[in-house]
Amino acid sequence: MFEKLIHKIVSIFPKPLQGLYYKYESMLLYIFFGGLTTIVSIASQYIADYFGANTALATTISWICAVTFAFFTNKSCVFKSKTETKSEFFKQMLAFYGARLVSYFLEMGFMILTVDILHLKMHIMKIIAQVFILAINYLFSKLVIFRKK
Image (cartoon, rainbow, N blue to C red; front, side):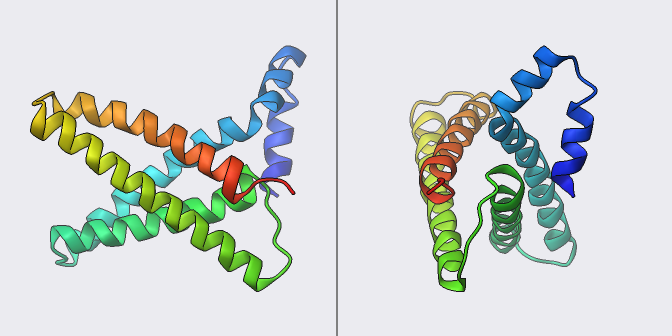
């Protein structure tokens, strides 16, 4: 259903733009769903905080909600990955969560190095970190987790 809607919208674009969209479709969809994942992350953080969770618990709940949302949207809408068995599905899910944990710790290390040790501006470093993490997560997802067989 989602795919049909997107193709309907893209069909109204001029042919050169349609070509660009289809050439970079997975990357564009990845960025779109990444934005939605960010909204899920922020909303779940606020909801957990509203119900009295401390910062660590609210952040953990937020991470779980965001990564779960990202897994399902990446699997079905971005990379259109099909799994034949439950075992294959859970293997893919575990790989996705594992990759996200790796990128989480890479981001944490980058932030500690640049902000706490080198005393660079946190907001700027966070944006730089997000660009690298976006690229790393995309590559993990495209080349390892949801690769075409």
